Length: 512
Ligand code: C2E
Ligand code: CA
Ligand code: CA
Image (cartoon, rainbow, N blue to C red; front, side, top):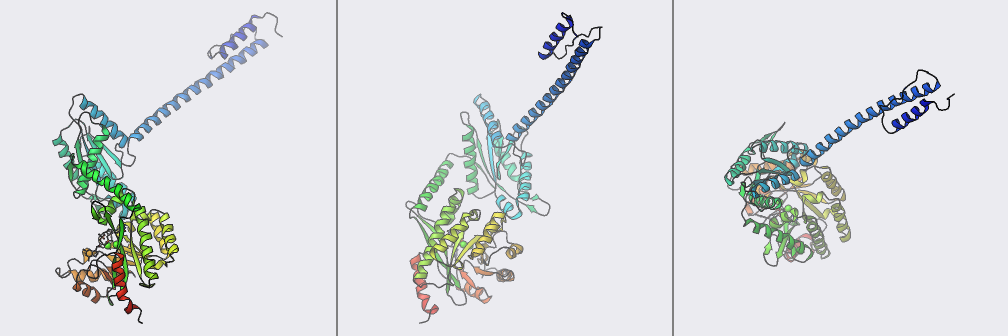
């Protein structure tokens, strides 16, 4: 075997140490002897060769993985800054663009302007035509805004149907021109596969100041947008400091309302629903009133939207449900009403989105020992036709519970015969606007008769709302409308007054 002191042994050991140290391109010299030791040296060289190839492959793999990682990182950064639906900038991209523009202004450059825009009719489109169509509309709107501004402007979608445009280094006049151009571009209907929709926008505008923060600029544009929405839709409003006052009032109203729900400032008034043929009060509609300690009586049209916005509607709705059912129980215990009487309450669209709501209705009815048929829930068309899974589930569950379901304000929204037939409702309350011109417009009687016929053909019952005169009541009775409601029969009034009315009709109801 190896003779002592063979120098190749030392070389072999050296070579192995170098390889182990990472010098993969070092090789050990093979001697002319070509003996067993040389065979081991050649084997070691082969191993080194293999190691080197493997190492190179590994390096290439690491390199390409690193490249992919970098690409993914860039993509993620882009995603973090873009709105995935429209490909426009998102809120955080907008905020950094605003910050950048404000920095330039602070350095003496011209001010930036910020436009905030909220679509007026988008909710209706989404509700009636579905989310896929809603997405198409948002994309179309994004494109129209994009083509109304310069490439250096940032167009962003801030979520939902809210968009923003930042114009760095501009003037008030140019910003206003661009704002109007955007409004005009949204005026033309958006053509979809089978229909065309038009959703105008409310636009708020403000021009930045050096020393202002991005948050302030966004807040001012938002305040201006709210003001333009409140002013009627499809408008452009420039921010004014006085607008902040209106906003303060609104947030004060939210605080007050929160206190009112837990306090005793809310009260329900009840308006009779009358059987036209006999004049009998067949039920009442509970309508909310708020006796504000300073502002006096506030009507629901003013505070319900505020409550909806502020997320207070479920608390409010719960209060209405408990109070109305409590009142019904009192009247029934006093034998003022029989089992054929109904208490109607108004339900908000957001109630259907809460599964607890169904439990609440069941618990309140069980607790009072009131049969579910005596409670009728009034839902507006908008709420009822939205048709998402949760709504459908809620409607069907309420239906199974046995409470009555009624479409409210019929004829103002997205009426369609197919949904009248499909929805699990049993009554339709026709909006008072459809009665307004009876007596002045010769075409009105025919329209009213047609609506009534349509409702009946769908197997539903009609309740006509807003009857103010004897003639209107007479007309409706003559064409076979069963029930009606309106100032002619009685205004919404406190429970005690209703009790008087119910008491007076008692002998007719229960002879003897
Ligand atoms: P609505 O459900 O359509 O209620 C009918 C409204 O028409 C009531 O206004 C009522 O006072 C009014 N009205 C009744 N008869 C006549 C009439 O002959 N002529 C005219 N011109 N008006 C009549 P109100 O009480 O101001 O309520 C406004 C709306 O506020 C209601 O419209 C309903 O959508 C909402 N609301 C009221 N109470 C509640 C509630 O407890 N919860 C919810 N979510 N909404 C409510
Ligand atoms: Ca109603
Ligand atoms: Ca109504």
